[in-house]
Image (cartoon, rainbow, N blue to C red; front, side, top):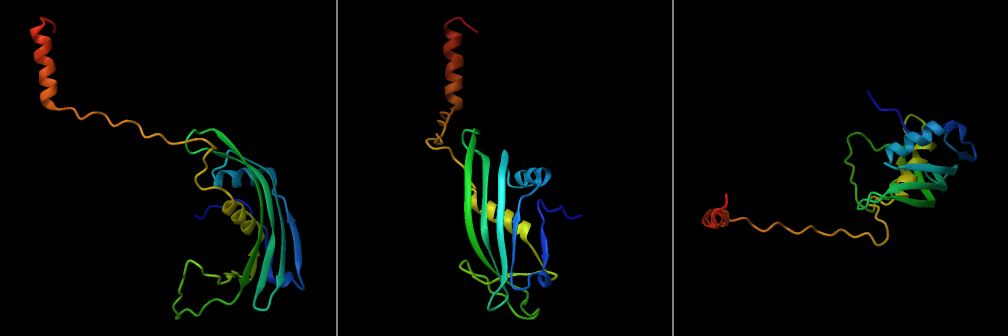
Length: 172
């Protein structure tokens, strides 16, 4: 069973024409699902303006994602407000590589994202851009990890010495 998407706004390629612009504002339930999926304490004012238009090869998705989120500091566990304002451009293609050809992936791979089943899910791209804007290891300014002191190695002979010392004093 597949898990439902946190936020989905599919657009069929045949609806694009010369270009399509949408403003996406997820409802309260979708915002809660997105916050849970991205491990946020809270997500507010999540808005995505997106433009999908034909390009020389395939399509081009561009836009802007803005939101106010509350992350949790990884050290202090305190709430950490974050304002997000991200612009992006993503090339898209509906031409998949041939099944028998090898696909080479590199870190700097600028290959277009694939359009699946003739649809582009603008909602998923909006959530992806929001996720890319978040710090994966949030830390409040000034918060520092302090390594706890290692316990002194306990020698079995030291323990015996303590028993002998206590026995000579008439204790224990």
